[in-house]
Image 1 (cartoon, one colour):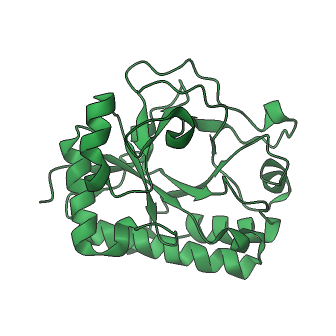
Image 2 (cartoon, rainbow, N blue to C red; image 1 turned 180 degrees about the horizontal axis):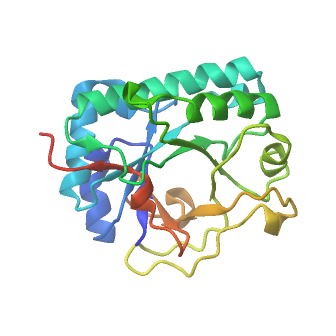
Length: 246
């Protein structure tokens, strides 16, 4: 089953998205740092977003972060600082939304947005990846956050090659290409670009594919459409909203 990612809040886009597509399996939304309204912008917003996701019939929330794109070419300290902001945002929402729980497999995909950046330095990735993966979530002694990268694997700027040279791992690619469009009820056959298919054999699999971008495909709702690899269930790697928080 396919799902949505959106720069808008879920409560703002849910009605139009469900009217246009009727079904979704998960939601992917932005947390700080990002240029959009973040899920963690307030406790009220966090609860409203989770309530809207629950009411859509897809109570699964995956986190994305999109620092100022120029920072992605920065230092390890820059990556660590942005990771700290991001992990604190995740924890804040986890505390603010009572029925929000970690996935039962203790593996939460955490996406760094590099889709439109012209650079991703090895130093920045190492700082960000280590900062995310080493976060002791809620002081429970568990480390469930899996640093992952949202990018165009075949783009000329570094992403796949950066991961090849990095010290700290990437647990998966979310590919933004190709874009055949379609809907969520009958998504296209899996065809997301891979690093290996684009000439960089870094051992990182493409786990998710954005096959429909709102501006490219002309969707009326402010959502993009995404599909998990056939061997995976995206919802298994997202926060779960166990009941309506409102």
